[in-house]
Image 1 (cartoon, one colour):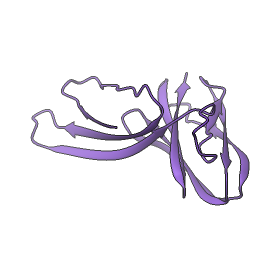
Image 2 (tube, helix red, strand yellow):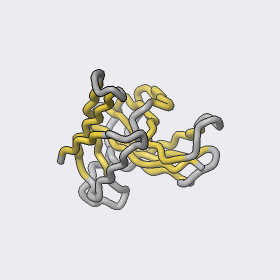
Image 3 (cartoon, rainbow, N blue to C red):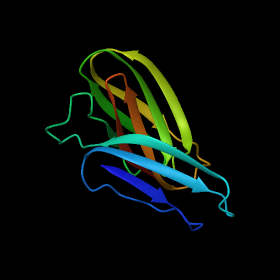
Image 4 (tube, one colour):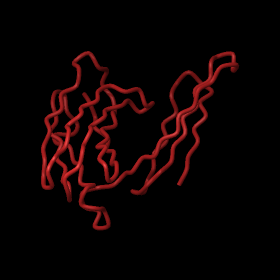
Length: 141
């Protein structure tokens, strides 16, 4: 499924995908005069731990969520892989990136703390591994 978001106002547009799965999203930002623009296209995989069709590598969970401080990320890997965690705003601005290196197969936890100066809102936490990517939303209060 593909989505193209075109923002013409000063407030951001939020688009929600109602079904788990792979989605291709293109974000285009234009200057106020409409002359300059930039676009970025990304693939996003949304799923839940209860999704029986999800691969073992796609079991990313966060608790507590919402959080006012730190949250613990839990995820499973079916085989050893290099893993990176990325935190972005809903508009795609990178907030934090953690290179976790080569992790063995099995269940893992990572404590995630965000900068106290960050505004409250919804952030996307993305687990990027050699065999795929999964993203979940975390509410920062």
